[in-house]
Image (tube, rainbow, N blue to C red; front, side):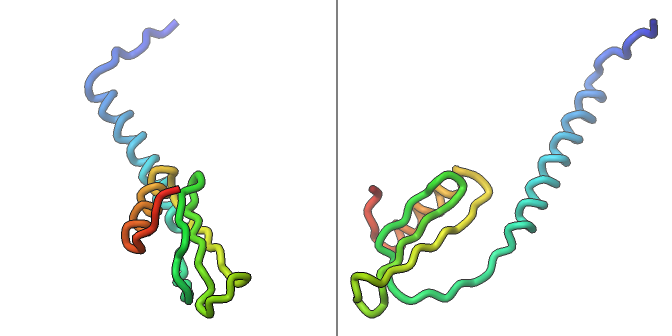
Length: 98
C-alpha cells in the first residue's frame, strides 16, 4: 500500500482556495439565474416581511379601493438577505414589524 502524502500548509491552502472559488462560482451562478427586472408599481406598501429566501411586499391600491391590492415576492439569495431587505423597506416606508 502506498503512503499518504503528509498534509502541509500548501495542501490546505489549495483546498481552501478551491472551496472558496466553488462557493463564489455558485453565488455568481445564482445571481445570474435571478436576473432582476424592474417592476413599476403604484400604491403604497402596507406590509413587508421576510419569508424564507423571499421578501413579501403588500401594496395598497393606488385608488384607495380596499378590495384592490398587490402582493410582490422578491426572491433573495439567502434568508439573511431577505431579512435585511425587508428591514430596509420597512425603514424607508416607516412600516411596523409584525
